[in-house]
Amino acid sequence: MGKLILIRHGQSLWNLENIFTGWTNIDLSPQGKEEAKNAGEIIKRNKINIDICFASYLKRAIRTAWIVLDNCEQMHVDTYYHWKLNERHYGDWQGKNKDETLKEVGEKKYWAIRRGYYESPPKLGPNNKLHPKFDPNYKNVDPAVLPSGESLEDSSKRVVNYYFEAIVPNLVQGKTVMISAHGNSLRALIGYICNIPSIDIAGLEVPTGVPHIYEFDGNQNLMEHHKLE
Image (cartoon, rainbow, N blue to C red):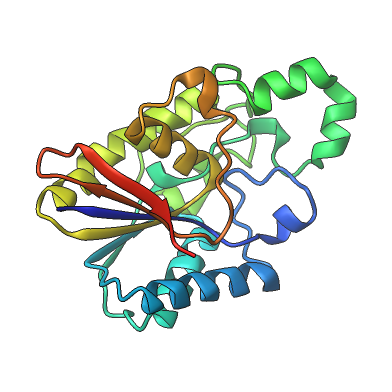
């Protein structure tokens, strides 16, 4: 029986300041580090042995994974990083205050983009230095596949693709897999695993620093899911 542990990174510095973060490589806030520490202690108390860990390319997810593994005394666990687990790319909105953006574009457009499934924020121009193709962290990734702005549908496709590419093979072997990622990337993955209609996925809340457990049978049918307290 495969077991999947999903953890949204702890509060980041830009979560704290109410700023669109997306692919901007922002670290955890002090509260975020405490949330990750608490998640690790919860896993330890529940005596869960992790076999393999995955995280995005963004430091807030990476640091969350490190802190969790440290505090559940499983630092030896192999950890793999991939850009397909990154947060949704918020394009030109990245670095902007959410409340100010709401006032600027109006409620209808704002919520259609932020909580809709198909709407994308304004995309970065191809020569914008904030485009991920100019970031050395993605030097080994084909620039043609790097986003300049994504709808929730766009980010869902890449996350689910990576789920089948790298994570399902481990679950099939009966391993316990931990993923440290982001609100939208985990929202997309949970939507797929739990067969949630696209119209409802955007309303799914994923709290920071709370381990959620998904257990599968040998055919990858979801048997049980719950959060660890």
